[in-house]
Length: 282
Image (cartoon, rainbow, N blue to C red):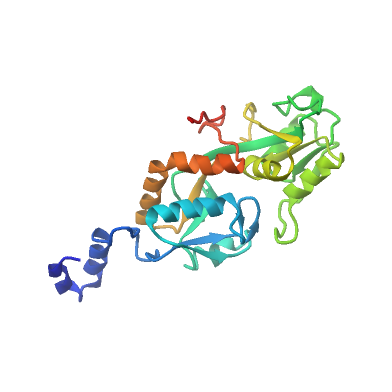
């Protein structure tokens, strides 16, 4: 801080402003409630493949990337992603960012989105359903299809008469002891299902990690509501616009690196309007 600025130490408001303007090189320039000594992340310890306490999830890798650009270490607050998650973590000021949050959620202040992804159809590569790309394909009739109950694809399946033989999986579970997506993929491998409909950022990485005999088809051709694609942001506390702008800048400047983290994990990335796969330059 310049020497003349030290004369204002009795004026907390001005001093806070000076700290923002003359922050040390390599330190994040953030609002007062945001730590400037660590990237404090709220995350579910058992939300594989996104986040995990062993730091193997792609959101953990994204946090590492963002922290490296801020020249800060990552510090986690672990809490199950269920009712009360934001209230008990971000709003309680135990951390400063949630790495993955759907755009437009009122509980948080969203950054600009860092990826757009979509629900997918997972089938065995040698299945007669392997080239199905729409949920209104007549070949899906009378097939046993796994879907997480209450998610947007279930509305499409109901419209197309696919729910009679569908197998619903619970949406609200304690991920420390249960995983609908992993259960669904195991049932597909066992032949109890003919296909599975999964959110791409969950199904894609799980298939890449453990099911080389499966293929993942992004459902980008659905033209009726509800939409099956979503833009994913980072969530920060309401009102923390300085911190939001800091993260927006990092997302914009390092989008290619973020894309690479997601693609290496197996997350299907699509164009912002949800109607085409993203073209990634090598």
